[in-house]
Image (tube, helix red, strand yellow):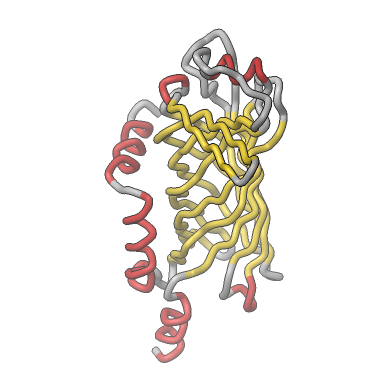
Length: 237
């Protein structure tokens, strides 16, 4: 584990979210083969942090790429990177806000939320049934890139949007479990539509005075890149 985490961190740091998505779109057909399916993965997630008074889930978009690597029959290794992935907590109470930033002058006129940006890497096992449904589960590792306490207020045609950087409150590495189910369209050759759940095992707070763990529900769509070209070439051969 001590060797794996620094390696994952190094991979994360080496690439930005924008460059990864661009490379995926341009070279996706080169990454697909008979035993590997590569594609863009994205969707909507509802996240929450335990240990706070608020229990309101933060709703955000996420995007990344995935690999399904064939092991045997209907068994696959499912991995990839969510390069744009935020989790956190919405509608923070005054006590929550003051804990996350004691210098804040609390105002009830707007709303506060905590947002933490991670690079997420799942390493799971996927099983595809012959009816094109699938299930998958396994560990997930994450590297925190940034975090902010956000205040939002809208009144009298005026929008106030303030972010306070508080990344130093949160640990850089998170270890979690990910599991889900879905369906693959076009008789098992097309888009993946699924739902998955992530539960964090590690305390995300650096300060030992409070324990907090992430959990998030994802509605996801996986789009194979260049898969039709690979299938056409296989049939022609």
